[in-house]
Image 1 (cartoon, helix red, strand yellow):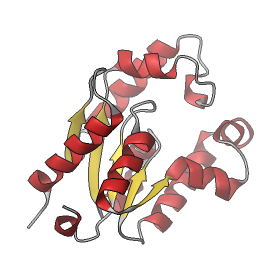
Image 2: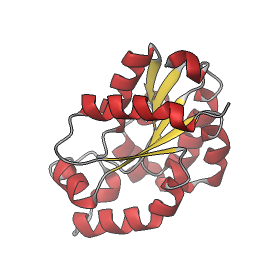
Image 3: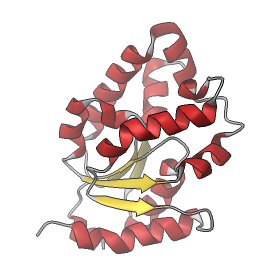
Image 4: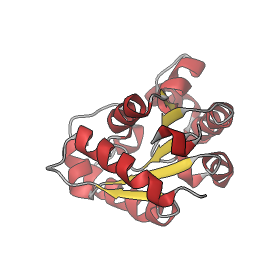
Length: 177
């Protein structure tokens, strides 16, 4: 399978809580690819948590860091990259994402809410109505996520391993000759 990819990167996009990091690590392992999480790279580069960046510098600074990290990562090959949920809102990021294969992990909002219920590390969910906020973010982002090369619709019953294997099985269907 990885020979069909010819070393191009896989970019996992989707909402926070969709499982991009977990599934991405499994896909990378199956393909013999390296794995990176853009949020973790941002934290390392900035020397502070994403919550701190949002609180001290604002979302705009975070999005600039995110674009810079993505531009640098996209220069490499044979990587599976889990991106932040909002990476798709900055149009310049699409130019980097299109250097690879874009896989959208599409999870229903109720599943995202269940997974994120006790997660305090998500600055965009520090809201009086986290479920409403998730719905609103998903509604805004859905048309952008839909530009992915491959859409994997998630359900609660599937394990991360099953999702990863399903994605790997579907990748050949969207590879350009």
